[in-house]
Image 1 (spheres, rainbow, N blue to C red):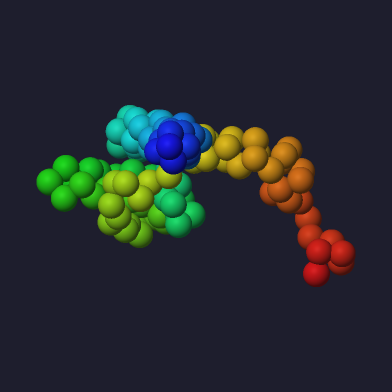
Image 2 (cartoon, rainbow, N blue to C red):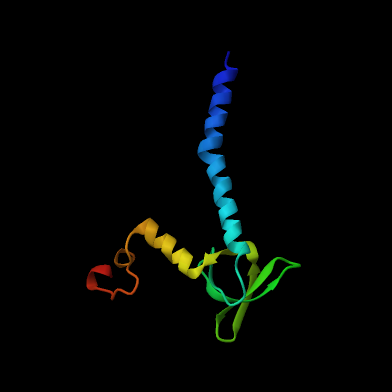
Length: 110
């Protein structure tokens, strides 16, 4: 008697939470897999750099974050290409002017 509502709630949970997460994870993996040498990327921590090389044995990427400065990070910690990440930010938060990117600071902001 109580089994039907429990199964129903489980199915609703799956279709509302788990299925969209799985789809987003696959999409993110496809973006990361398509990255190539010299692509400008953003890490999940916000570090912007250019891909110098891939180490497939350890699943790591070597990024150049400034001239002569390179860091090694896990490939899965790459959020995506810089242009794609900025496009997503604008879509989520509004036009560029609302983000304050490239806007001079005012007394009101301090």
